[in-house]
Figure 1: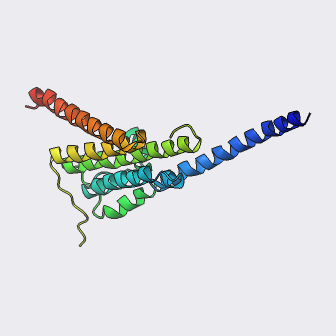
Figure 2: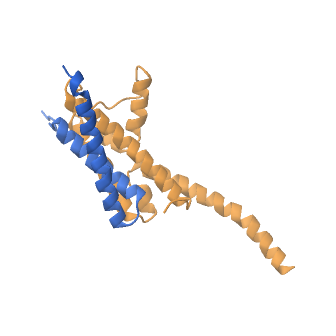
Figure 3: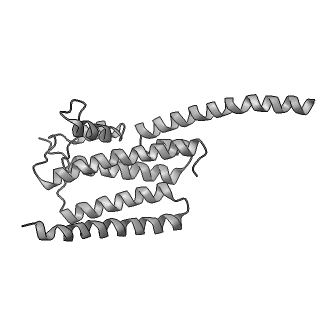
Length: 142
Length: 64
């Protein structure tokens, strides 16, 4: 009788625990997106946190330094919109890239074209890292 | 007037930097043990460069 009661309580507590865990994982993913590496830092995965911060940071600094194109929300076509989504993947680093690119983009040279790819890749890499942190927080990745 | 950072990199330097940074990012995200990470980074970097140089050579006949 007592065992049945305890099993029932455990069955009720488990979904609540899962819902709480999902919520925390979601917050960690958002934190990881906003500041590269923060999601992993909250999970105490220090190596991954530092690696994410540095790799995304280096790509953003190089991309902005090479005067790559930072897309805005007012794009003319689907490629501009996709580029904006990729660039926004860097979270707050998007604003840092904007402030670093004082003279605006210049894609008339190969440098600028490469810079555009660096910036987009930084965003996609950060989104991948945020997704990894989300899965790790849910207990699905180590 | 502030001229910004203004990096000037050659095609090869750009490719090397890109491949290295992405390989490090992938290595740290996908592997847990330091030895595994190092192996993964070296292998990913090698494949990035191989594919990059390979595509460069494949395009050479059409470059002029």
